[in-house]
Length: 135
Image 1 (cartoon, rainbow, N blue to C red):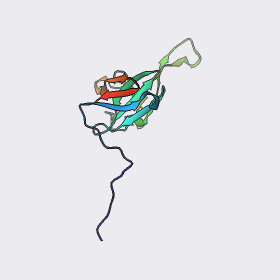
Image 2: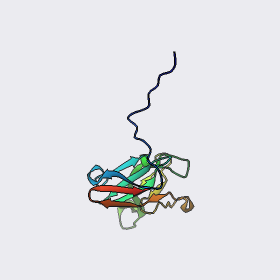
Image 3: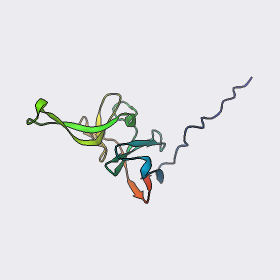
Image 4: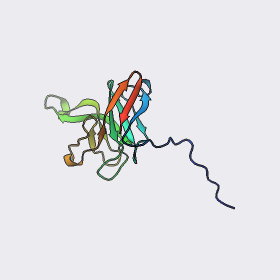
């Protein structure tokens, strides 16, 4: 008997690269949240940081991890004036790979770990209630 498999209907189709796509409405990605959209080989993560939208590749250059499965948070800096000498700044402006915790700035794609291994960022604009990404 032949194998009768059906395509996964719950998986959204991949969107073509190199175009502008409506990926969500503003209310679908409220401040402090994100959405991974199926653009290109690995997808693109779209983040709302206090009303400003950013889009990054869902691929960590370190070992190919699913970057957008990691946590968005701030970064820790040294501050001698506080107990423990460390404070978190720029809340939700960095994404940390779930595999090895490499942190990347959402607005620029840069990392302090190895700056030459920055990730790709994509233009985002809001038109009416639509969030559009060019990727």
